[in-house]
Each structure stands twice: as C-alpha cells, then as structure tokens.
Length: 226
Image 1: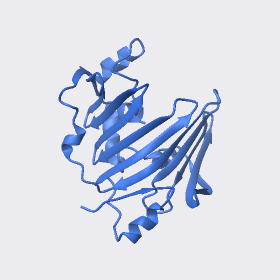
Image 2: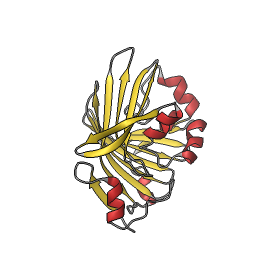
Image 3: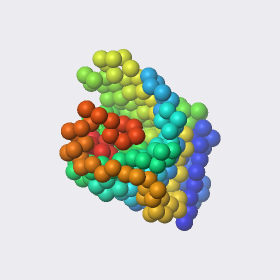
C-alpha cells in the first residue's frame, strides 16, 4: 500500500500527489492521519487523528492525561490511558447517519462551512504556499477555513471568532498522511480499560448534572451530529 506524509511548512499537498505518482484516494475510502494544533482562548492542544472508513481514533493530552477517543458505528468511546477507565456512549442517530456523507471522520471543516452558507473570499499564503480561504459571518460570529487548492481540499487551518464573548479559536493542521496501513484493531479500546456503557438518552439527561467519562467529549459533532 502506498503512503505519503508531509509537513505543510515544507511541501504542498497537491503537488505531493503528482510528484509521487499517486492517485487521490476515493472519497469516503482509505485511511487518513493528521496532526492538529489547537490554540486561542483555551489551552493549547495537540491531537493525533486517524480515520479509516467510518472509524476514528484520536489521541490528545488533556491536563496531563492521555485521552483516547474512538468512534465506531453507534458508539463514542473515550478513556484515560493513565487510569484505564472511560465511557462508551451511544451516538446520536443523526451523527451516525451523517457518517455516510463524510470523506473521513475529521477534517471536514470546509463541508460544514459551505453547508452553513460559507463562501470563498480569497487565497492566502501559509509558509509560502497558497490556500483557498472560505468564510461565514453570521449572528454568532465569524468562521474561516483555508484548504488546499486541489480536488481533495484538505483543511490547513480554521479560525473561529465568537461575537458575544469575543473569544477566538484556531486549529492548524501540521501534517497529513493518506493510505497508511492501519489495522482494524487500532480502532478498538485497550482491553484493559474498564468502560461504563451509557445510552445517548441517558448521557443527555445526566451530562448537565455530572461529569460522564474522563473529559468532556473532544469531538462533539461525532457524538451529537452537526
């Protein structure tokens, strides 16, 4: 199986496909990996994300605790690798249904923005490379995402500004890889982990009163739908 991996600071996604003689993988198929750095008016967070068909595995350190999130079918699992404990929540039927329309289970910022009415406004430069900037401004604030100038249109960064609070958030994709060899077992929880199983309805009823799981869901759109 062919693969490639590159830093956006040193190579351009579209030219990499051509230079390596690779055909872009069909949408909704294959495997993807990305490293994402989030910052702004919240603690800096580095995430490692893998997607294979309709499955996701994400790893991030939250207040010193390595948190694993696994999304597979109708289950949203998150657990702490230090305490070996976590929760498996039934996903919203809306979220499960939306899996079929996703290219992968992360990095779909452009699709979300366009569905909400966002439009291309200009091209920008990131470390000497051009990307297409899309923007949506509404009553909630302003959202922007810049994507590669090819048919894959991978997001390179997103910015959010919230009107009421004035808070900002930014996420930058540092690395993209595709068609890597990831076995199905990688999208299963560590067998040593003790999981509490909660239905989606029970989670909604309890979430406002108590903490369920090691952290709040870090990929809310995959639990609730968008």
